[in-house]
Amino acid sequence: MRLTRYFLPVLKENPAEAAIASHRLMLRAGMIRQVSAGIYAWLPLGYRVLRRLEEIIHEEQQRAGHIPMLMPTLQPAELWRESGRYDAYGPEMLRIRDRHERDMLYGPTNEELITDIFRKNVSSYKDLPLTLYHIQWKFRDEIRPRFGVMRGREFLMKDGYNFDIDRDSAIHAYNRHMVSYIRTYERMGLKAFPMRADTGPIGGDHSHEFLVLAETGESEVFYDAAILDLKLGDRAIDYDDRAAVEGIVREWTTPYARTDETHDPARFEAEVPAERRRRSRAIEVGQIFYFGTKYSEPMKAHVLNEKGERVPVHMGSHGIGVSRLVGAIIEASHDERGIVWPEGVTPFHAGIVNLKQGDAATDAAAEEIYAALRARGLDPLYDDRDERAGAKFATMDLIGLPWRITIGPRGLARGKVELTERRTGESEELSPAAAVDRIAQIYAGTG
Ligand code: ATP
Ligand code: MG
Image (tube, rainbow, N blue to C red; front, side, top):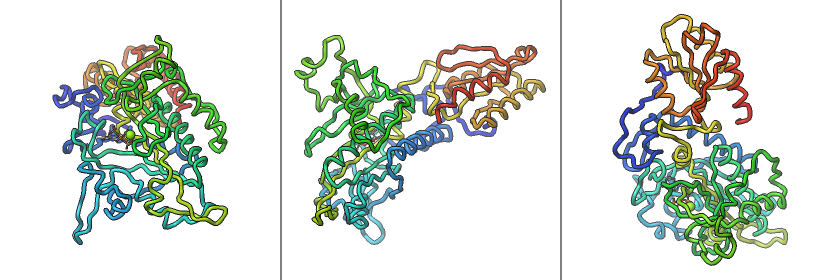
């Protein structure tokens, strides 16, 4: 993309309404604009990141054997009356009436809708196990929308639902979700830890929230510092191998890590040596939940089991806060000059800065590098504006592309350009071809 043909409305001043870094930087970098309280338009740069997160989520969900689909945002109230949640949900639910006076709602989540689809189309254990998911906008009329996309009213969520014949099979689905989520967040360059969470009235120990440690987080967590060393990396995972998947889950859930709702101070002290006990603020970026037959019983989602008996299916639901993640990644990765995108999620792979736009030699070299990066399947952002170097650098730093190639007449005279890493600020002089090679190598493993 050439910046002169793009839409990147960056702001020089800090917007007064933004209380935390990610909100401030998303506004300043021209990623989002508020439309109404807790409702945002995603401008091109923000939209690129959002799409990239969706891509990673799709890849990892499908790797785990989960099937993508798409349900609508609007749902009929009658389904929620069946589950008993229409009244229970309260004022967070946006209720709408259509022209025929039918009660509708803008979905805050989709358990009822997916259970209805399931019961109308599946009747035998032979069609199980089944895990369906989608990535769709949700609406929750939050009492206090704040921090930009972190706590919006309209927000993008990946939500998946597993249907299994019995508890064991459903726990395997739960475990698959935990492992696929760990990998998803790692690919996004994030450290997000599963922590034991509240299961509410259903009870049991099968809910985990995924938390990113951050001062500005709205959750409070208690954990063993040992979790900080956990890494999945690119080890091969066979998602059909129950024992192997369970082994990874055990690795991640053995060290103490809990949200404040499930925190048990006596146990914390007994299990974790004092020097490893940590208490922190954190951002919830996902949650997984096994809830058995909570919806399948009242909504009569039954299947015939091997013995020919009609039994309610065992279900779980599993969510990732896609739009919140954009903010969470920035909270975890920025400095005083702007965003620092992890390579896995960056909106553009590299920035190209031409220090002397209009100079035949620098223009030609910049064009050549731009074309060479694209030929390697990469997406560079070429700042081809007729602007001062300082302004170009400030924009690149603000929008946070991990790598920048700077082209100026002096370096070119020696056959060199400058390759700069956003995170460290370190620069290196290379030939244009070597700079392109280096960037291609860096991204070779990021999918
Ligand atoms: P919270 O406790 O933050 O209100 P929740 O537990 O009600 O969230 P879930 O139902 O678990 O949310 O939804 C799955 C994920 O969707 C959450 O882990 C979170 O990342 C994201 N999410 C929930 N509410 C919002 C919101 N208002 N704005 C942005 N993302 C949200
Ligand atoms: Mg939650």
